[in-house]
Length: 181
Image (cartoon, rainbow, N blue to C red; front, side):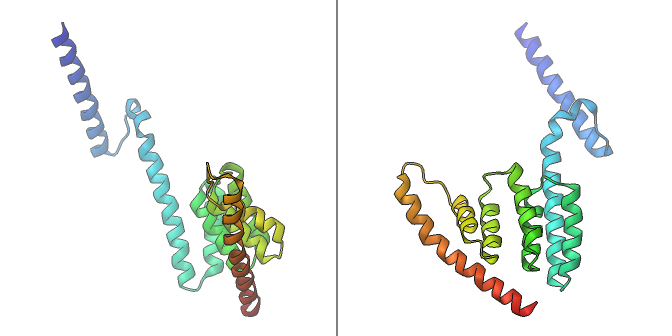
């Protein structure tokens, strides 16, 4: 009896693998195989996200900041929970000194990814450029890695030593953008 069960199990595995191969070769999807394909769907979404960001980067490199921003804004509006494209869109707004749009974009990311350290860092940069020092410090502190087991003194030392250069850098960027814009 055990031998029959093993053979049936092996046959069913081979049948599913064959159906998957046939579906892949024909370009169609089998309804029974839809559930396992979620990992593939996620990677293709990540691929689309990366393509959108790469396209925007090429347009920026070609000198079309406004076009890159408009295209990426349309992509992010159609895919509201994509972190990388939305973060790059916020960066483009920041680069164009559109701090209100950058803040809005970064805040939208933080609504569904509250612990995203890079986005906290970028939002801190926006606040620093607007001379909103207390808000900037709050965001920069949220961007620091948590140091479990080290106590508050280690965290406050790390935050004070790393936040001051960020504030200075953001103010320098703002001054440069003001002169060039």
